[in-house]
Image (tube, rainbow over all chains, first blue to last red; front, side, top):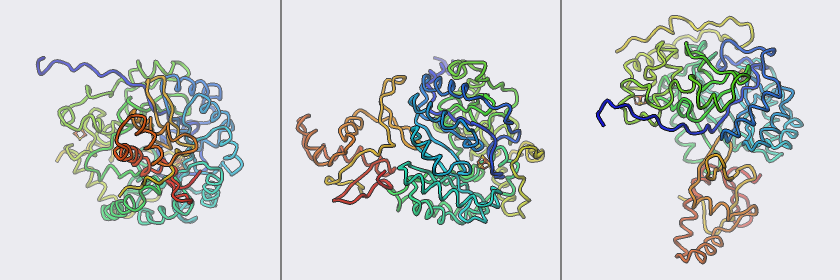
Length: 385
Length: 106
Ligand code: SF4
Ligand code: SF4
């Protein structure tokens, strides 16, 4: 074989996870929400029968876990029916909720229908902090009540802590809260700058010093809490050395079904111009996974350019995030600038340092009708170093 | 340091599910936000824990007799395959009467 002979594409494996965004409606207004700035309205949401068909098709295709998310999935009155069907299809069923819209009784009903796990978002550790982000007064008390109900019901639950410059210094308190409330797992997830989070980046980006401290706390917690609390974490890409293996590779492990039935390889993928996302109302899920152009676009390594193409890490991180390359460089085939091997990496990091140390701008809250535009000047390609 | 000892009584919590996946033709282990593809040895150990759980020393005796292998080696293997699950809080572990679980007994 000559050096230029094309490498045969690897066979496509079945998907492992399905992210079912049941609705974009949400009682909270978190400025870091990763939902798209163009939210899907209620009238365009899939109906119950279609969601049920999606779940059946997903299980048939090889999906093992479903993540019922949103928006706030509890705003769907058919959530009980959807959970029951997912469980009946053999899917491990996770509910991702803000706790506003699910009380102890409803959680008991969902548990009775077979729900396996509930993930509860904590915007902060005080009522004041939670309200500042989510703008739903009294939400923290509901979250705590739901966590306690989960423990009573024997349901494992995850404390999902979304971290940024305004609460990162309270990471120890998040950990304590998880232990006090009997969480199975904590997700210490620094904000990912997509959707509304991208719009609010300058208001949310932590400083390098905050992040340094976070890493120290994290190391100690991982050591001391092994076997007591499962810990997962996410570092902001802007300060990373190597990018995250976004979605474990494009079209490799996960399918996202948006509230209106569009199927995407990643929940942020709509920022990539020129890709047409298949509609679950019009095409079977199997065909979407194995045959659609959108899922094939950045699958594997064939689409890569240098430095990814010849990089020994290319099967580990798959070149990072396509959406981030598109958002920051205007080119979805570029190496994710989060990678230190990208010529744009230093500029990306500098951007984060400058934004994080400046006076934070006011939040643009996530809600229907807000005209949030991704600020053009930040979308311009970063200069190469 | 290992989180498990021969005397521990161990089982999978009700919410950690071991099942055969027809699509892939292999066992899968499903847990909150995690999908694991256990090797055949791990599958054997997990299946033998059963719904009630087992004392690891008893399980090692059983496997040693069955596979005609040194008991201490088998015990080390059993603890070896379960250790990662224990660290990830995916086992229910009882030690001399009280629960000391990957978080808590469900
Ligand atoms: S991040 Fe906040 S606003 Fe967005 S869906 Fe979750 S709870 Fe709602
Ligand atoms: S060059 Fe590409 S493949 Fe290599 S580490 Fe960076 S993003 Fe990953």
